Length: 373
Image (cartoon, rainbow, N blue to C red; front, side, top):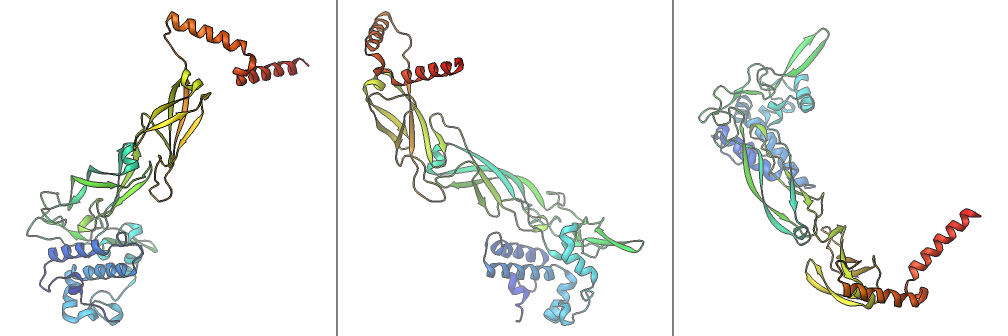
């Protein structure tokens, strides 16, 4: 299968300078990067094709050979000369360069680092969804030099020590050791006139504002991936990704457990004994909760569909209200007298008014009886 013209792959003319070639490669690489197109074989092939085109057109010697002989001038398998014909050094640099920190001159610009940002959100925003603006500090491509590291009007040159490979080989006895080039520090290129804005690094630390769309139903630990919003790659390489991790703040009323919400509802002694109707809060507003007579502390009431709809799909959860019978405080004389009369009246009814208390005392009595036998 014949290869496409490298200039056509990057979308530049044959007279394009190094800066234009690099800019075009970044655009194509960002579009077809595998991280942005997971599982897309065609996008992966286009990304590899663009990387191959940039490798040739960014190197002055390879580009000259390509312009004169086409693909035959740069493909060792087609008999192209001038590049060592695929010797051991080439293979070592291509296959093992990433492991030993070298080979950058041949593998093209490297991808930038991924970043993580922890986003604190309220329970309401986590359940209903929201759009939140965040400010993220990161390394971004220098606008002055467009990420090249060289001052405007100049460009990096191939390192004379390593020949653009980024690594040098040293003889130690019977062994040859390959290590990062001390001159260019593995970049494969030297900058004689560095950019004053980034001091030749090609990247500057800036803070950018991003709008994050939080989907309904997220919970603490969930992550949102923003492709290409991480750190810019060195030497004009593609940017990494930004992972926004959710951290849901504790709520003053509700507690979340998966798709269900829980809350405690204090009720009066009278409502617990005689029954009543209360207004209880939900994330959608107030609803009526009917309390039956003789309700005990700890009783759970389920309000169906008042919980959380999971972000990954499924039915909406419930709101479970746990009632807590509150003992009256700061009683006046009249109130104390009435309660005393109530206690005396309840005592006349025997064990029927306090079945739990009666069974508990019987259990205690049996316990001590067993100890004495």
